[in-house]
Structure formats: C-alpha cells, structure tokens
Length: 327
Image (tube, rainbow, N blue to C red; front, top):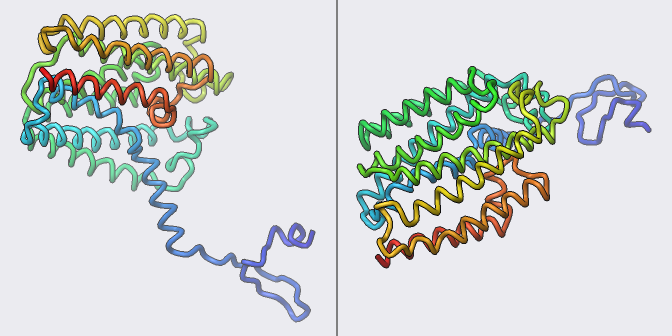
C-alpha cells in the first residue's frame, strides 16, 4: 500500500527524504551498462532480422543443383552472394519498418519492433540501412557485375513494395514472390550457371503460397483492425485466401514434381523424384499448421520451431545432395 501511495517506489530507488523520513524526490537508479548494452544489442537483432536470412538460402540453389557445391571457388562465390542478400534484405527491413512506424503501433506484435517502440531512433536505423545497402552492393560487384545488377533490381523492387505496392491486393504477394525469384537468379549469377525454368516456377509458386498463408494469419489475428495495419488486407477475405492457398499449394507440388524428371539439370535416371515425398509432406504439414493451429504469420519461425516441418526439409536436403552426389 505504501508503494502505491508513493507512486510505485521500490527499495531499488534512490530517495531524498525530509527530516521525518518523508519522500520528497525519487531518482531511479540507472541500469547497469551491461544490461543497457544487452538490451540495445537485442533491439538491433530484432531490427535487422537475422532470422529472416533463412529466406536467402535460395541463392544456394544454383551452386547445388548445378553440382558445383564441391568446388571451393564456386562455393565461396555462392556464400558471398548470400552475404550480399543478407545485408541488402536487412537494409530493406529497416526501411520498411521506418515507413510502417505508425501502422506497426496498431499491431499486437509489431508494435514492439525497435523503431515503432522507440528503442532505436529512426535516423540511426536509416543510417545503418544505408551502410548495409552499400556494403551489399560492394560484395555483389566483387563476385560479378551480374550479381550486382540482380541486387540492385531486388533493392528497387523492395523499396517500391515498401512505398506503394504492398498496399495493392494480390500485387503485394506477387512482389514478395518476385523477391524469391531474384534470390534464385542471384545464386545462379554468382556461379555463372543457368537456372531451370521449372525450379524458378516452383520457387515462385512456393513464395505465393507462403505469402497468402501469411495474409490469412494477419486477417485472423488482427480481425477488424487488419486494414489499419496493412491497407491491402481490407481487400482480402479468409474465403478468398483459402482458394489462393489451395491453388498455389497444388501448383508448387506439381511444378517441383515436373522439375524432378523434366529439367535438364537433374540426373537422367529420374532419381530426383525420390525427393518428392519430402516436399509433399512439408506442404501438407504447413497446411496443417495454418488451418489446424492458426499459424503461418511467420514462416521462418515455423521452420525452426516445428520439428516435423524442419525434419522434412532437412531430409529433403539430404536426399537432394545424395542424389546429385551419386550421379
């Protein structure tokens, strides 16, 4: 009761008292420097989103499916392409958060983001984003001019997305899917190999599938305030998104299946078809999480937290490497 009367003062506060012991001023003790630094480090991690870097793993498709992963030089070039996209994508996340500061404050989860919550000043965040963009482009040009061109194209599309395109129904998800296509193209450009059109098609449909699942989750979570956070959500309905999700899930599985025995970059004995069950299981598991558990708002988190989903993707990778290595 005494604490409430004194405005929540605790024994950890530095107090100035009068001659009879009455509190005449409260001076909170400063947090230890180590705790401040730790909190700021976590804020920067949340702002730059390293967990989202898993999306950039698509750049390794070129070196893996071209069977050049055992060549140290080519592998280094692919790794550098991955680093370049991690830097540029983090810069895009910062820019997007800066654009969405007010809208994020209406979101039950995103309002805790560093810029929206005030943990990091917008000016500082934009400065870091600029350095990351320059750094990513420098890494890209070190690998090849073609990679730099892809990086610039990705940056331009994502900036347009943050400024305008994300507010347009359906276009918003298509732009996100184009970002994944550019990641795959970047990986191929890094090692100077062509990319299978079937693999690009599979990547495109998979990105659409994940994007529509995310929109569905946002509508379910935000309910009537959905359009306040993202204007394009006002043009979607759960029923419409269910149709989109079903179509893109089927298209993804079909495109990948066709890739395994039609593409000229896979073994001629059709052994790559052995990887189809893992992809099918991963798709069905994700659908179960979306409809059975009302998840799907954060694909990268599901990948790391859901053991069956992670296991299926891991086993798919092992199977792909095994098939390509044996051949």
